[in-house]
Length: 154
Image (cartoon, rainbow, N blue to C red; front, side, top):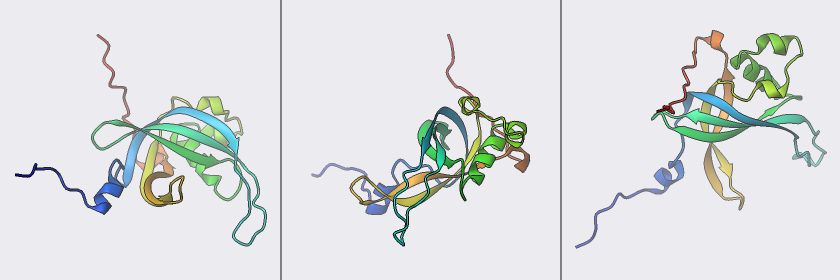
């Protein structure tokens, strides 16, 4: 007699461990300022090198579990709009508008993140699915953040 077990198909296996698309409460655990890699674009022209921040996020999934994610937010260039959204979602709109945001203001902030599952490549260039932060949601968009620390002190 064979042992019973849960059978997974290939698609279920690829989706294992991912947070479904949606908006989730998060906390910025750490931040690092870096530059983009540069390199060559599809036409063989050099890509500009831009400053960016690398965020270590703790996202609360649909089961209330803390999950770690990274996000890369440009500080210059076409994608730098995301930094404005990040600042507004963290309650730093006045500092952003007055050019007084410093990166040490971000750790500990609790934005709402808009997550999507996207196709990507692993370190061996194999196709994988990953959670990506598509945007940060500002409180005035009707989303509140009830992120709380569930560590109970005894």
